[in-house]
Amino acid sequence: MKRITVILSLLVMSMYHAQFKISVDAPATFSSKEVYLYTINGSKDVLNSKEVKKGNSWSISVAQPYKGMLKLYFPEINATINFISENKDVKIKFDSDKNKITNVEYLDEANYTMNQIQDIQQKKEFILPALYQIKEYYKKKSDFGTALENEVLRLSRPSTDYTKFPFITYYNSNYSKFLEKSAATPATHKEIIHFFVNSNDMLESSSLMRPMLLSYLNTGQSANIMEDVDALIQAVNTETPRGQTVLSELIEIFDTYGMQDLKDKYLTEAKNLKCSINDNLAKTITQNTRTEIGALFPNNKFINATNTTAKSIYDVKADRKIIVFWASTCSHCETDLPKLIEKYAAIKAMKGEVIAMSLDSEKQAYENKVKMLPWINDSELKGWSSSYAETYNIHATPTYFILDGANKIIAKPDHAADVISYLKLN
Image (cartoon, rainbow, N blue to C red):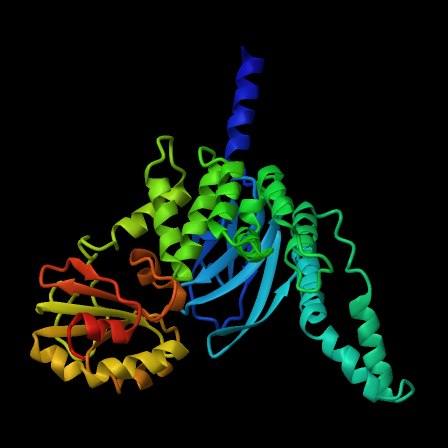
């Protein structure tokens, strides 16, 4: 009995023992105290844990085995650091300038290796072709010509040996095969389907899933994209977690690119599934259901709204509310919003109001822009990390909703001109 008790005690202890630790060192001048750790599932960030700084560092214990992409998010300054896990300890150090993260150093072997590989990969894809052209104009024996030749040779050689790192091997071999721009022969539909069906779980944690789905949709010259998608979905089987994650990603891709018929078809298929639904697909269904026409628009409490004393969207009294999600860095917003400004007086005359929710992250850029916007403006100043993106299923800016006086969604126009047409203000 004593032996059994000891074994059970050891098993219990092992259950609570961290798989690996993440150590993050910051300079004394870096004021942010809290950090969030996210894993990834498909293209969705999954909150793993939160940690408060002790001294000038954070120490985060990860309890479950994990190989894949990770992200540290500092909510007080809306900054992130991306890195990987090989299910071994990670050590990161960074500098800061005016509380902004600079010069990130990856001090563990796996992340150092991955950083080197990605640096070379980017240069191979974007710089190497230009270097080939430039070096033709310089004599090889000149200092600059010699330097060019050496850089071309360096980038042309095989990357650092990474075979002892399972995740790095998985990521880079599949990126090279399916996504690299310089690939001699693009992967076929059949090859991509085979990969999705047979890959191990690192597909979900690798960040490769969505780019590979986009590659699948853009591969070949099929006249019927729906047939291609049906073939993929049938192969991955939507009664499995892998199949449901693929279906979730496809619905969001179709939503992002305005492919409404495809989005509606596969969203309906998702809603009609009779099996248990995984978290990814459940979230996609929920986000779309609560922002479809006829749904009650979720309320939002203002943080620092301009041109109003209202405390939330529901507090704004109007027969029609035009909700706009935008950003000062969005070129489409730059051309679209002036059309609404021209009609703002007419909107007010019909007892309407415009409420603009910004996905900006830079305070100064946002404040400079809203000085020229006459309606209600607010922002969390967290960019695409804002709660708006998830709550209102926002994948692009500008995005519009029109609400009635009871805050029900009555229209989802694509452009400002469609808003104006719907309100009969032409």
